[in-house]
Length: 190
Image (tube, rainbow, N blue to C red):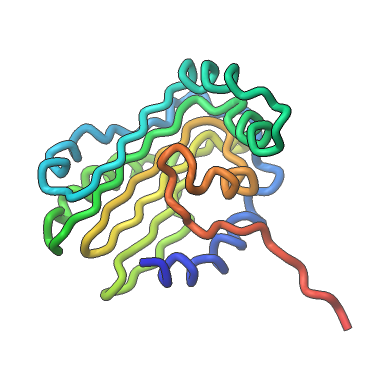
C-alpha cells in the first residue's frame, strides 16, 4: 500500500494546487460520515484504531497545548476551526476480512452532491486510495479519505475548513495515517 500512496503524491500535489485558497469557513452541512456500520470489523481485525474527536474535544486539547513548542503550535493552528476528526482503521491478518459492501456503505454517503471524488487510485495488488471533498459553490467544508488494501481498511473524515498543506502536518497524529501528502515544489528554471 505504501507504494500506492507514494505514487499518489503527484495527484496529491495537483489536489493541493486546486485547494490553495479554498480554505474558507465550513459549509452549513455537517460533513460527518457515519462509520458505525464498520464496527463489526473490530472482532476480525488484528489491530484497530478508532478516533472520535469532535469540536469540543479538539478545543479542550488545544487548551493543553502551550504554543511555546513549535510542534504544539502547529497542531494548535491545524485544529483551529475544525469541527471533527474521525478515523477508523482496521488491519487484518488475512485477506478478505472486509467486503466491498463495507466500503460501499461509506461511498453511498459520499455520493450526495455536496461531496466530490477528486482522487481515485486503484491497484489490483495494492488496493485503492479515494479522496473526497465536501464543498458548496465556494467553500470547502470537509474531507474523506478511503484507503483499502487486501489486509487493511482506513477511513479518515475531517470536518471543517480543510487546508491540505496543513493536513500534511497531521499525518501520523490523531490516528491519521501517513498519506505522503506533500506541498508542491517548483523546479528551478534553467
